[in-house]
Image (cartoon, rainbow, N blue to C red; front, side, top):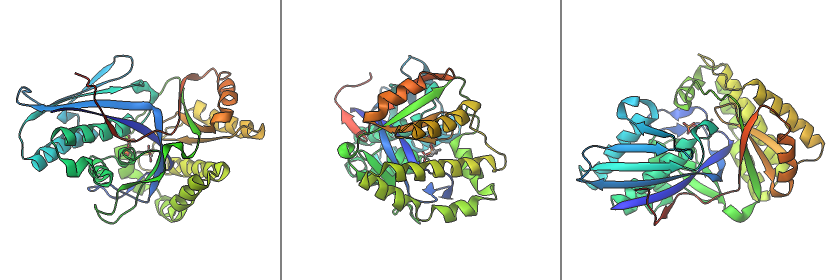
Length: 338
Ligand code: DP6
């Protein structure tokens, strides 16, 4: 059966960086995020005796294509392992064709894997008729986590979500904090000219513990997910902003002090941080957060979006922006990619 699922990327407030367990991909602490309405992956999967081998193709919005191969290693190898696991659950040996379309460019540096992996898992499970794996979002999120991406696991639920810390596979899953219409936040992804992500997140999670500040991060993280969760529930912009900015700087401090060190910030990233402080002085509701890359995500409110856009237009090192509202999580569509 041909099945298509769509899923959003997301932006984390309290980041996932470093793991409790590298085999089960258990995050160090609970990590929470908002789904992004304009950063979507739409993925069609079909298992059939007509497919001579597994085929996975990702197509960006400008038509650029990536063909994934098992020997690419890293996350891609985990993805092929996932396909074998899913075939095992369904007791089938059929090959699969998967075509995933992104509505944003690869160069945006957005965690396309979060959107792509969650949509892919849902489409694969449904096309194998594994109801127990895709109807229960908790179980779907556990399986997505095992594909090597906690950030992707957060995308399966709607709106504002969290992937919980757990000591075991069972205990670490995604749940909703608040629905899509809870809060009219906007996440503007500001794509800077010349993006170069050199160290993958997977390597980053592994080397995080080499930072002399790793233990301090574990200690610092203790109450942060609960505080961020409460700030989301209370729609407390200033508190969420403060928690997020401190968290992203904390994460980048770990990155820069790991062995080998990972520097993701470019001069534009640092300049934007200073600009955010200035814009806040002018009364604009805005805070910044960065993933494992140089591009800031600026969180603002719908009412301040235009003011923020006109400030961004003045910056000559910005390539383009993508504005996102809170979005639904992984869901199925009737139209297919092939
Ligand atoms: C910095 O291993 O879940 O974005 O970066 O997409 O490969 P990818 O995913 P993952 O690491 C996420 C790292 C992060 C922080 C976060 O989203 O929590």
